[in-house]
Length: 392
Ligand SMILES: Cc1cc2nc3c(=O)[nH]c(=O)nc-3n(C[C@H](O)[C@H](O)[C@H](O)COP(=O)(O)OP(=O)(O)OC[C@H]3O[C@@H](n4cnc5c(N)ncnc54)[C@H](O)[C@@H]3O)c2cc1C
Image 1 (cartoon, rainbow, N blue to C red):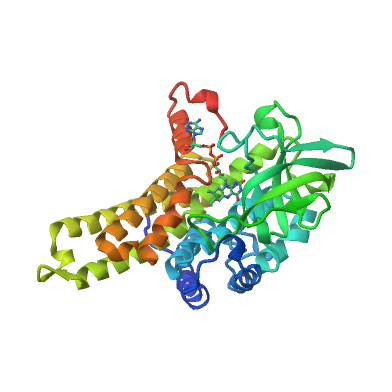
Image 2 (cartoon, rainbow, N blue to C red):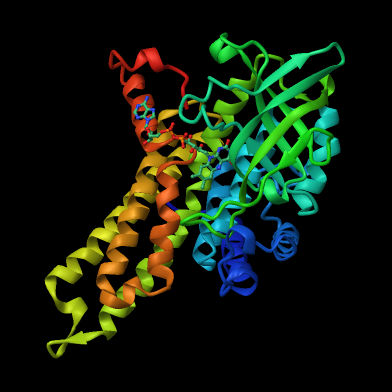
């Protein structure tokens, strides 16, 4: 067992922290109608030049060929170097939920056509499965894809699609055989500008404000059969595979964010004096900081264990689910603790309250924490959970 990164991964981490501090830090949060798509694209191109938005894509398709451990290290560095966790989240949704399905299931033509510009930062990708009536029950989609020989026609609406307001390429899940459950879904790649595809206005969210989110509508949208991702009926497999990546590598950004906020909280506790002593010398405050450290370090171990498995081709879905649970719950608690240690200053705009706001959605996206527990219980062989097999 080795708890060290390879020297080249260490170097990449340091470079990513420097990049995030230089290009992403200190930015005002944008939200809803105030979202500035041009500024976002500018930062995205810089991240592309840095090799961040194509990290896990093989070098032959324009990526950096990172494995899951190195990709997690880069995501952690992004979260550490900038308080804009929303931007890191957008990068992760692009990379792990959208590009990895193309890498793992795409045809050679799809990979050559789409991946180079998606890795360079010229194009942005989004992944759309969630619908107003199909959240946790992700196999129960209402969006239909009707087969018409050499093409499909898509009808339906998606919601909560990360990156939708800026996306050039959408990985879309639709029902090709409604009622066939796991085998009833098919994944498609659909390019922005395709007639019949439209995107709603950016949402106003409590957290992850640097990441634009919107509805996506398909109204008689014609998609060539050549743009099926994987095979017809393989949509749920495409989705499950991408979730292993997302539940592991995406959450590494939160490790970095927690580390950054923990360090500033320790510093604050050492400087702020009450009753003639630094507040950090009071046992209640010191223990809180120890608890924050314990949560962060144990979540980090679970995440890198999951990443280590993924890098070795493991099909295990429990390790990513445990990592997702541990990191998201730790992030919420670390956010709360960071506010408490700062007293009234904690409720002013700043990195403690930002962490808490950014952490709240983490318990929901990539499959809610309750659904992760259902999946883990099923893997433990607990009866009653089996019935819900394959839900996200
Ligand atoms: C910031 C953000 C970004 C997102 N980005 C994307 C994206 O890019 N693409 C995309 O497709 N989706 C995205 N989503 C959607 C996300 O995947 C869904 O929100 C999530 O799957 C939960 O679905 P839901 O919100 O409809 O909640 P629901 O499924 O309605 O669940 C509501 C509550 O009921 C609980 N619940 C439901 N069923 C069960 C059960 N069987 N057992 C126990 N508890 C249960 C849930 O845990 C939750 O607490 C995003 C969400 C957020 C918040």
